Amino acid sequence: METDTKNWFIKMQDTLNSKIGEKNITINDIAKEAGVAKSTVSKVLNEQRGVSQETRRKVLKAVKKLNYHPSVIARSLKSKRTKAVGLILPNIINPFFPAILKGVEDVAIENGYVVVFCDSDDRKEKESLYFQIFENRWVDGIIFSGITGDKQEEKYIRSIHEKGTPVVLIDREIEDYFTNVVMIDNKRAGFDATSYLLKLGHRKIGCITGPQNIKIFVKRLEGYRRALEKYNVDFNPDLVEEGDLSIESGRSATKKLLKKKITFTAIFASTDLMAIGCIRELQENGIKIPSDVSVIGIDNIPLASLVTPSLTTIAQPAYEMGVEAMNLLIKNIEKRGVLKSKIILPTELVVRKSTKPLK
Image (cartoon, rainbow, N blue to C red; front, side, top):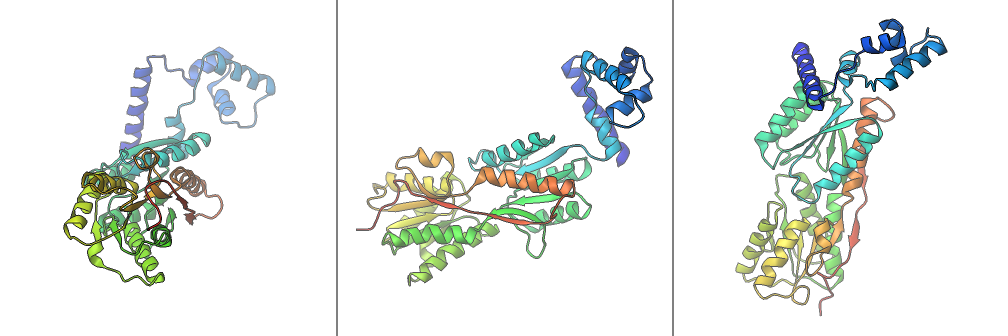
């Protein structure tokens, strides 16, 4: 396996060199230019002792003149570090995830790491493939936000983690297995969204939940129910429909609610995209937002402020999630500080024009 990995890195280095189209400067070239032995150049580049200041100056001058960049590949083979981390996200088209990617990349670059990003397109087979690639190739750690949270996902995470590769999960948890997690309090988010509608006087509140095989959406539904309970409102399962997180599924779930002929004055959707789909479907049925029905979501994606009416939502700090996840991963890679943490980031109610008090 180690030989295969080395061959893979060497092939990657050759590909990069050929694409750049430049002569591959070596330690031999530096040694000739500086008039010193290769071993001396190696000592200077690795900041080792036993080299005079004058010789060190000559070597560094040659490095600058020849525009020499030490091979990351070669160094990684010696140190067993690549300064590369894997990032698997479920759907980069979803406006929530680019901010996470940006947060991860900003911290990575600042600390000398590169990010190998993989988009699973909400497809389990692609997700499994990426796990296998990262497990068999050299990345120093993995940041992961999954599709379903099913047993196969958990199996890959456990396997990689137990082999010594640090893993940080974003907005996902594994039951009875403690690893590094960065997330929000999803039950609280569902509770706060529903409570806001209740404070506006609404009592007949529909809910478009996310897939119930994903724990965070189970928690958001629990938050919805807990808010109803606090305000002494009976839970009606007929007012709940499930979506797959897309705009179209928000429309489909809203159609189902309308077909039931059950009166509702507000809808809580577990994501902004489903909330936007809900608004579109209501509007196409002649229902005015928020005069007839108030709608609230969760995420605060950029599109939330651009739709008409603009969407009231519970803001998730997506960029900060990426930042915290990468910082936590680096601590684990470099074994600094607390190596296992569960970081809960705060959410915020953002009031816009899709909600209003019930008359």
